[in-house]
Image (cartoon, rainbow, N blue to C red; front, side):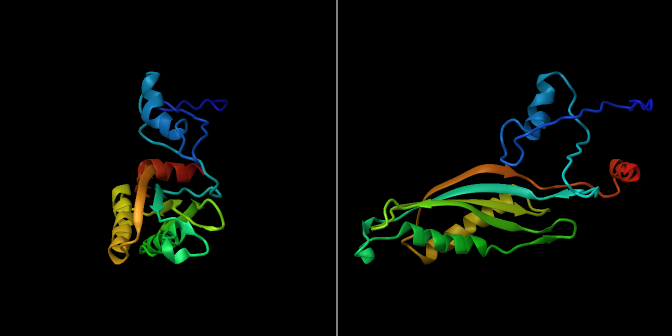
Length: 196
């Protein structure tokens, strides 16, 4: 503004939070609802600033957060063979999900799967009746979030077929985002690189 620059269109700067936890009030809200609700036009181009050493990244991984619960059969810790240990069943399921083949992208690397949380059992001397785990699956284009979700579902189904004692009691998707990729020679990208 001090230099007298007048953009040919609208320039909207948005300082948002809630991005890391996929909250309701982050940039997703601004893009999908916030601008429309206050009568502003939808942007033609979004620039998301991340710590990138001034690199212009034109591809972004998709994200899928899934919560899975496994039910077991409780028993006394002194006779674990009389029950079905939900934590042990979950560890087997974790291994199956972690075995999903990883794909790579020339600009953003490989898929990743993180086991973020695990909660199970009530007492040390009891065979746990329930275990719940969350997964953070980051995946590269050209797949979309439905493709990634099907990969997790297929891993669970394959494990169920091989282990009839595996009882998946909960399957919840609580974050789903497709990957993004912009042509590296798009006019906006070339201009941005020239400015930097």
